[in-house]
Length: 181
Image (cartoon, rainbow, N blue to C red; front, side, top):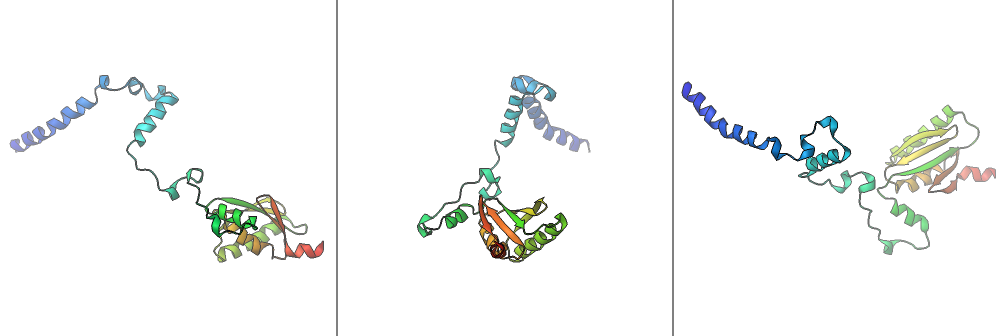
């Protein structure tokens, strides 16, 4: 039994020596010797850089949207007379907000129900949009893939209670509001 303990101690001795060697204060830079509560912003930046030194870079689709590479636009297949098509292609994979207005003078609850129905219809058609009410008769539809906003616009302007859709500061009036004008 004693022989086992001696073998364990002999095996652990190099680990203890190496651990002691790497934790000597004189080997550390000055900023690492400070109490963590006394770290400056520069010290924290150095610590973060040291932490991320050996990490693999993220895949492009895992990066935050503002750091993702822009999609390559193939302008040869686009109709130069249709600027809307160019906008649609340039927003692919980017977040895009559209404003949707409800006709008449609806209460907030009524407009909420109408826009919720439109959102459900879009989801049923595989167009993913988040909806946020911003006024009594107006909602924001947020598309994670901006290219889908134009497909949604085509659906929304056909709805009886849709006053209009605004995408990229361009107003698209609802089909049924044109009859009223």
